[in-house]
Amino acid sequence: MVDSAFEACTIELRKLLSQGTRRCLASAEQLALLFSGGLDSSILAVLVSSIRPTSGPLIVAGSNAAKDIQAARQAATTLGLPLEVRRFTLIEVAEALPPILTTIGSTDVLQVSLAIPLYFAASRAHELGVRVLLSGQGADELFGGYARYERLVLQGEVQSVNAEMETDFRKLIQTTLPCQQAIVERQAIHLVTPYLDGPVIAFAQNLPLHCKPLRTDHAIVRKRILRNLAVNLKLPATIADAPKRAAQYGSGAARVLAELASSYWHQWEPGLSAQESRTQARIRQFLVALKEKELRTGGTT
Image (cartoon, helix red, strand yellow):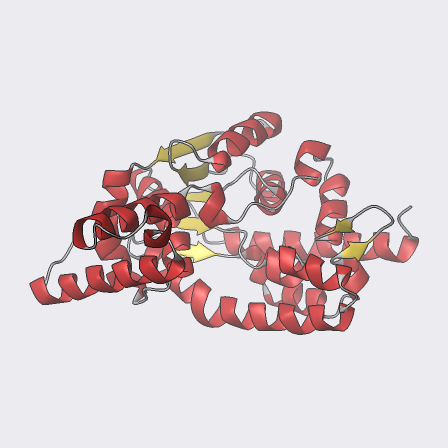
């Protein structure tokens, strides 16, 4: 049963997020929404369409085997909204890595994995004449979406969850978001993030923990208030209850990057096992080598 105080918080979040989304759209003539078909982006899709019924398309990018593409197709059909799909191949990612590394200025495996689908989504948005791209960034860090928060709750370390969320939020603002903004700006597009609107951040940071990950008799409910908001917005259970899919895995980018690293090490260290060539350390070394080669050759893309 949902208590009245929690329901009131959900209504307040809907108001604040709607206001933040409206501000993001105020000066946007041509826009699109990064869309995975999951909880966070579906909430934004409903809010955007309620503010501007003739808004631009949803955009999803992924490899041929990407789960995000399948989920995005299903959710877009359910919502009755247009969807643009940009599939990327191994060869295309290999060609895109040098400009991605140059643009984000990092060889961090996670940041590169996140940048890959965004690079192709932003490229497609640019082709469509889009000038503003909306993203659901921030929802997981503010409302408790990551699996490690769940593990902490299960281990009885509830007080550690807030500290972990604060650390993740700082990393988002200081590292991840600047990288993503740089990728999008490369296509002359402005990235906007309604979940990171000031009043929404303040609201989230003052919410009691049980409104975020909540332990029930059966499971941990992550992003509890966002799931209740989805119900409030009349989203179907297939979306409201959808499990979290990390972008680097849902898009297939992490697998493609591992395949490229494995191919690189097969050439330079043929005795290395396939498993070893795909470790985070080896992928990072591959990215460092690729960036150094780009610097030596002075290549530009």
